[in-house]
Picture: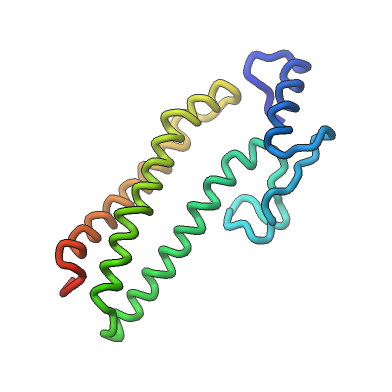
Length: 164
């Protein structure tokens, strides 16, 4: 259980309990499940290792949404590739995917990461020790991938999905 940086153990535990209550932890410290562990997309948490406290859930919940959307995106890409190989992909299918990606998915991911880096990680560092730039490095690689797909989708949109 994390306590606030610089707090005495008793004061830190009191703060932890009040924060924990807000995140669904009982007074005994037992985590109240908000997520069904066997349905989690996380590679860290699951049926054999469910989230245990507010610290686990504060990173898990927002990333579950992202992973679910990413799974849908990958399924769409697989289907588009399958249709493309069969020469039956329609221009509107490419166009709709790219408009969704550039208009919703990529901006949401960028905004999420900006908020983490601008607000959440600095706040978290006041509470616990975080290795320097651990999270930002993962974001840099992902942002590069997002931007590459964004560029491809801009070309598809410009051509209205025809001859892409």
